Length: 242
Image 1 (tube, one colour):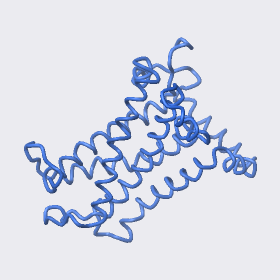
Image 2 (cartoon, helix red, strand yellow):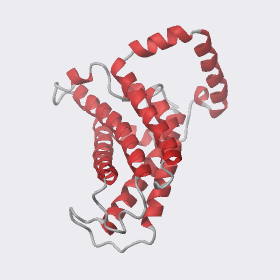
Image 3 (spheres, rainbow, N blue to C red):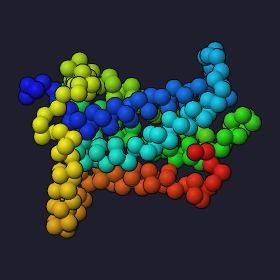
């Protein structure tokens, strides 16, 4: 591939593509759940779909299963696409190119946080609440808030990607071409090399981990801890929605 063309790592394209499909599907079906049972803030006269809660839950569960890999990739190999230590200062430079980039990084980071809120609040909901008209539960309110934030962040992510990279950047996310060093055949050997390096230099790696973009490291701990919580919640609350 020409080195001058926008290039995205193959693993990023796979994780990003699958996550994007599942997120959009969860957003759409989440709205249909609201449109069927809630409607407090307006509605669209779509035909009702049987067991829309189950369909929404299936997409959400698939996304949760993929979320750990996507989050780990985002916070490490893809950390330049997330909020940086100087992002807040850059956000004051309204209209400049770095402002658009920083806004996109902020939206990407907020999307991960909102995803954790969405999966946790969804896991704590019970299927009988909405059909029974029980809209007052705090977990449902948090789930609605997470849905709104996710919609806004996805919109900003797409708009800023278009603004920053234009059509070439967007098209690069859908290309299946990859460089030899990015081949799936190399993933296992690169992962083993990373583990070996981590074991041999654990102290230095951890020190660099905390010093390199400290605020992002805090967000990473919160997000990964939230993902773990989403997996174990049904163990302690077996009546919650899967």
